[in-house]
Length: 372
Image 1 (tube, rainbow, N blue to C red):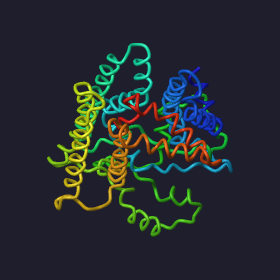
Image 2: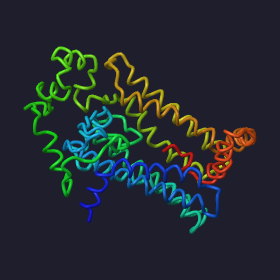
Image 3: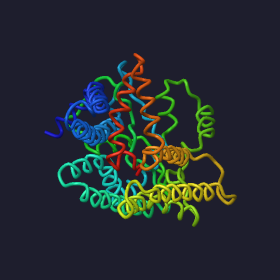
Image 4: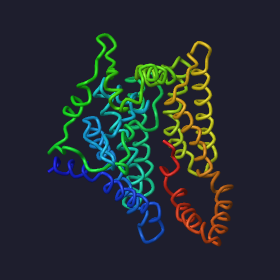
């Protein structure tokens, strides 16, 4: 049954992706439409997150086996991102890392839904116990990832990104009855040469020229690779090891959500001290990590995965505008005025409606603005 489902997903990837995107869009506009609409919306979104990861893994196996074609019938090229190379290498090296990453992702997908169910069924006091437990588990999982990666930065997402865009795919060629990881790996690496000491795999020049239909030259290929050192660097070199200062900063970043939750439980959600302490811890963490990575003894070349993660963490500071008591005192009234102004504009009325629908969720539920 699972093999038939896998073949169906791969054969109809574009249509399945359209259905997923349609349902995901629906979850954004459901809150506020009827009783318990936010619960239904979050349940659909959580289910789609798990299903999406499974579908991506199926397409990834098919892509590595060379089975996918675009709508013109040409073989789909896999452009493995630095992010996927890094996490893929760690997952191959350690099954514990892979299992930990999956557990952490599962918690991130389902935490909002769990909080909603606890609030509705068990009450406010039990909610904070469950939230604290989830944050404790996430801290332990991230510390495990930090150790298993060799004291490297723990990224916000730890599951691989999509290898191919499903919307661009045509029908699968020579569709098999099943897709196994071993078959995909064997097909993907059959024509590659593996270094005896480094374990790195290299594509023969003949295959490169065949894939580009003779438009590439050996000198052009070498020049292109030299301009993009990340493409040929060892996977684990894509994120640098922390020094003592950076490691302390990363530990602070991992512990920050738990510190905030424990502060709320002790002092209350409307007290300024948990909000201010969380902000100070996050600012200190960011400064310590940046100082460590930019120290003179560290190499100065670009590291895309690091830069993307630091950029993501910078945007997380916006959540402080949506957390009580700052939200109650400063942001709420201004957002309400923006929503009212948008409601009087034909093209912006949907935005105003979304702001009004999501304001109660930002105020009521911790994980909507947790940034953890």
